Length: 239
Image (cartoon, rainbow, N blue to C red; front, side, top):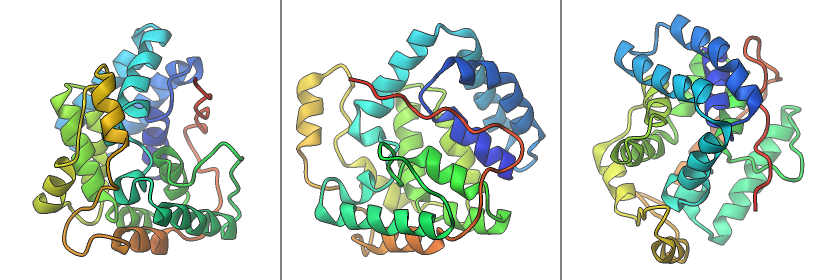
């Protein structure tokens, strides 16, 4: 379980030569995890094949168009809860504090709600605790998976795995609420600008701080690194 979470964290980071070189090792880790449904594992191998075989600049361009330029596909969890509201800043502070209490410290360019970092953190915890923590933002994973399915992106498989591993499963109404927010094509600059100007996203009954509070409450102490897959390179700043 720990190695699987480390592998999934790596797959969601900005593509680098190091990630391309590690594709075979990541594949072995995921193949050995019996908790991953076979059909989803096949789709993961499609993504791994792309990472290993495709041109690095093509991989990076696709990653940026998906996760950097499209707000509805943001890998920052609190983006889907708070948008740019003031509450997001406090949520960041609280989550960062939880990391630091566990002895985990980030550099100035890192944000604590970045999903690869959160998965890296969960990889240091007991499997039961990690599965429970994954259940907190599981509706976000469901919405991201649906949006990636619509785009026919193999990255969908990563989120299907996270849903499969989570102790709680997403409710259809919560996913539907998230999917009502704008989801423009990354090449439609006007639509992208409009989406970034929208009000913060809310979802499901009792929206607001409940998801944030539940997520933060479950992020507790552990020490990294986890054994197995080496820590992925952090995304490099892009203009």
